[in-house]
Length: 445
Image (cartoon, rainbow, N blue to C red; front, side, top):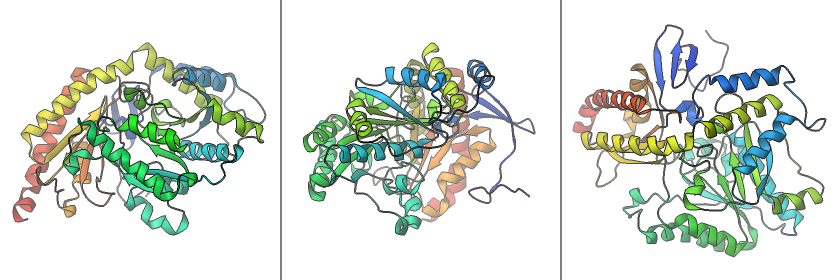
């Protein structure tokens, strides 16, 4: 019996220790962390340099409230993060997680509008499907019905445009016309809402859990920047999952040279060592807000010195070990190996991703893109099979959380080819068992 209230009734083994890409339970069973937890542990577990940095900070102070003190750790991390951003994104605000970062980004955008005489702008357009966090504010811009529907009466849902899922729509993702097709939907939505009411467009440069490592089609990112500029709409880049090197660049948007007005980060920034996130804004947004009386927003642990000391050590490890480059190189090898599994197993209908943010999607028919029968619960059953074999992967449902199944394979950025071989072997064996289990259901259908 546990006094902890978990998300469901299922129980898991007790974690004993973790090192590098591996984790052990108290019975001694070893697991390969093939999803970096929830795409968090970018530099692997128990990195000695990070642990030493945390120890040094703990010996000085573990807390200093931002209204009482500035701290060396938070100033140092802010400077390092700003130096890794596109030009003009020089102002950093720390938080403790992704949902807080998204909320902070939206509130900064709104307060900038108020401070510059644009009070009619309040709508934040996002995509369907998408995931931006679990607080009510973040859920309002999340396009994932199974998570947001229960709370719809409690919030003000924001406008959505279709995510650029070219593979499901039968369009060529390499054709610029495809990217423009989806980007034009943003312009149409802005015009329908009334441009003077639209505050921002919020998106993940590479889709996360809701779309399973969705890479935008050619031309899409360039065009949305042009549209935002045309209508005075701020572009908020949700780099909570893609940031800190996950896709092979420090920010995912760098792959397309797309300039955001605001970046929100978390996950890989703290890398599982401490709760940490950040909102990084263009200085042209921050200065009017400060002149108007200050940023009316904050959290008790914002800029916590222990979290920032850990974050600084994480960033230093990403740079010292060349983990962005390793993510790009190992990501290409992982994608190639996943395509090999796709050739072997017909239920894999699509493989996609960037760097070490990769996924494959189950389909009952590749031509029609029909998902597996919902009652199979493939997204959960496959994860359970892999877990039993000592491989941890992550899953979600592709179609607004109610149907469709994709599996995210996102190991730590320290992964080697030998680790990839182990991951693919675990996936192969799990797929073999899974396809045997569901064969009677598919045959009956």
